[in-house]
Amino acid sequence: MTKRLLNLGCGGRFHPDWENLDFSPIAPSVRAHDLRKGIPFPDESFDVVYHSHVLEHFPKGDAPVFLRECHRVLKQGGVIRVAVPDLERIARMYLLALEKASQGATGWNENYDWMLLELYDQAVRETSGGSCYEYLRQDPIRNWEFIHERFGAEAVASREAARKKGVAQQNKTELFRVKWSYISHNVWKVCRNKLIGAILRREELEALQVGWFRRGGEVHLWMYDGYSLAKLLLREGFFDPRVRTATESQIPYWAQYCLDNEPDGSAYKPDSLYMEAVKS
Image (cartoon, rainbow, N blue to C red; front, side):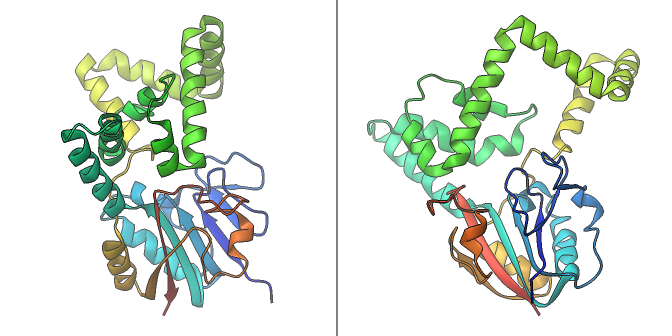
């Protein structure tokens, strides 16, 4: 019997054998949906529920609600697979970088700067990309190998996106094109913002814009290590939580879907904590 597979918040990592949902789909085969409003399927619809780098974007108090939805749509004995940034590994590497940089070890000053951003920037940023975007715009990036080892293919994509955005900002014609493309696709939002800007003082408007951004889904609102994620899954009705690798899974043919791994078997996001559990 063919298993039903659900990929939540898929971004650019999806497969035709799966039902794929995302807030802003980049392909016709991906269904648009805001996961803050629940999961739009009946009880016990799927054999597998998977989400990668989604859970940390929910406030701590909302994460259990989201996992209960995952539990609801899973069949009895179904598998949930969760990938999140690994807080323990990030913290341990930050402390190592701090120690090495304090001792004057070659190259570790840059590694320390990056680890501080990795630990903190995505939780506190108030504009898209934050300080990580500025860091990745550098040419050359002196500790690129270190960053690439931690972020894998995601690092390459992020670096290229940061540099393309930087070039666009310097090109007045391209900047004009991007601006008017945004306006033409967001007329109501632009008009609303103009109206609000005419009513509020500058500092009030800035505070509102920061609030909109932080509720927009980019920032990390909580972080997890293996202990806290396992505890949360157990509390929400799953059992036997186990840490996996990017290619290891109890989901049949997992590595062939290339969701957590590249075709050569390397991890797409090496900084991740991968965990699976079963619906009890």
